[in-house]
Amino acid sequence: MSEAKTNRAASKTSAVVDEDLSSVTYEAALTELESIIARIESGDVALEESLRQYRRGAALVRRCREVLDGARAEIERIAAADLISKADSTGA
Image 1 (tube, rainbow, N blue to C red):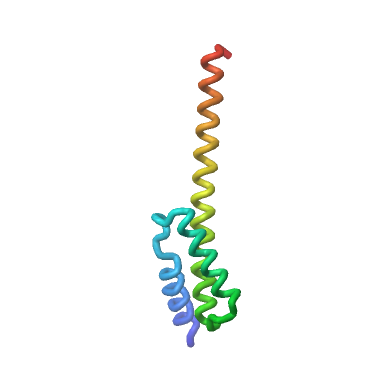
Image 2 (cartoon, helix red, strand yellow):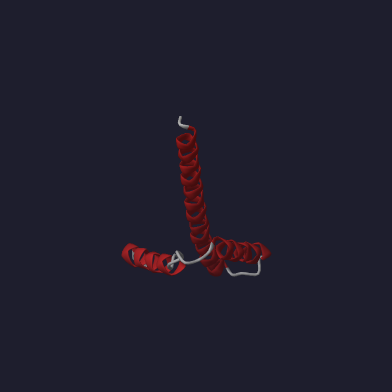
């Protein structure tokens, strides 16, 4: 297969694996990721399917990190607002 065809095939596979996960909750992503890990570790999955599942797992890990980063940012924003509110109320 030519390099161009290989790159197109990889992009197409990546697009399928990286389908819009923005609506997937952290819990759903984590549950699916655990399922993927169990299937791959069982050794009952063919190599190509293992690779596809691995790519999907990587996309789910990215989604989990996005959700956690967003939660961390929100907590920091709330904590900062709380500190400002307390400082304003004490006259500091």
